Length: 317
Image (cartoon, rainbow, N blue to C red; front, side, top):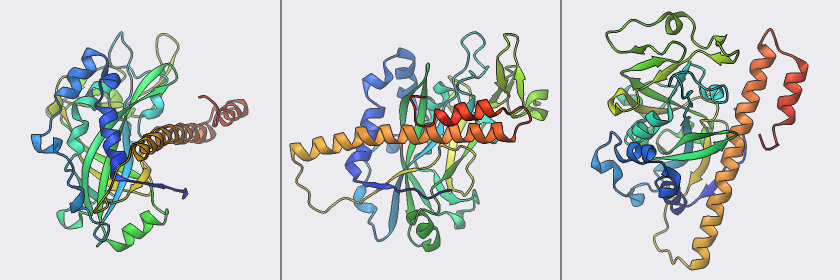
């Protein structure tokens, strides 16, 4: 990954991330409020973070984006919209918005590894907290999941790679007890056989009956069943399956004494608003770059298509 400057924020800003994610304005619809009110987590996961436990001499704290939702068509509830196809990860997995809202808090307490080596003795740290952000994406709304990662400084080489900007991307691990084919809609459990699309056509493009180009994917989890998808880890990786899974900020430890003024609080809120806008712009650029790369490698790529995508990198799209 190319290194880029990463800002440093104080813990108060992460608390604002959580407050904003759980606010009434962000979950105005009854469906969303119901989903976020019943996550599959223990009560302890909702307790305030013990910031004093994460001293800078022992822990590296990072605020990262880890996964995003894929919208589906209203008529069949499984076909991923053309606009959301860019959020399918490179493993062919996607998550419906309601599944994200019902299960994103399962990240809390999950392990932090490197390159998905999921052995207890290879654990690098913990996912301390998680929040969800609703973001405008053209004609649709998408949910991004942000996590607060604590990496143990005893893993000096890893921490140095992250702090120096050589490594700034992550990848999540999940257990999906039930999945659904985005093309035919078949729900697949532990005792079910895969449909032909999941078995042999993952990430294959196809054109539906309406003439719309789609991507075949496996939707993890089933809406209304929060036990069908459990996020179990977040790894530092060189090549993420989800291009938007990157560090947003380093999070400084709390000061021993702190006098908060009205002016300071307003400054923090201003920085919070700015960081959200910057993070969303970085994600849009990352997705557009990924789209350009895909077109360049495809047999049907056209110079005009690639030029149009490049021209939109810093526009409103």
